[in-house]
Length: 242
Image 1: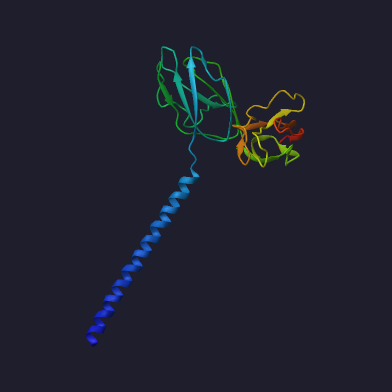
Image 2: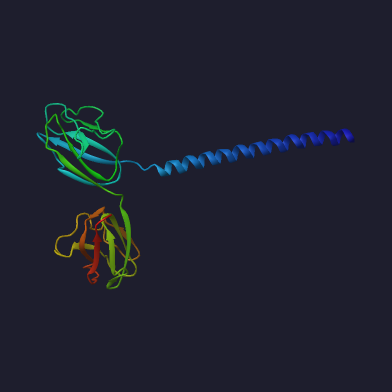
């Protein structure tokens, strides 16, 4: 009997050790996977900027971007030689931005791209010395701030905005209006001059939300409304940054 009890105790100890080890291994794998997932979620994919060249020029003559990671993809439309892409800060035309060189010169009808280029707020310029092209400006604004707005019948919930110069995305919700709604942003001095990129990506149906592109606002007075609801004109005051 004593021999049986001793044998049973040994088997139980071995089983307990195996279960404990398996639990530690499982938890360790979970923590490792969770860590990898968090790391992957933090790494935003770079934005692709498509450019093309014809004889003596780029098709896009300037860019307004926000801080972030970019890959510039360049196509040679019809030039009978290899072309390039040269990106520098405006303040130093000899300091090529890291990773901004093309992986290969672009022959006629072909496309090449840069590495991942991280742009911080500031002014840059790009050109092709081989074509050659003029210098084109890139204005990089700080990362966009999201402004949440919503509409009910005949009005916006926010009746005035006071912002500082910078990049914004306006996100508009239709709370309870039985038709598609919009967002119209203009300088106060010119009610017909809609601010670039300030149109919603789609009209906003009841219970839905839509947003503008990245809107770069300089110091000044603006106004916003919805002509489709319709709403009054609301003030948006933008002051210069520090």
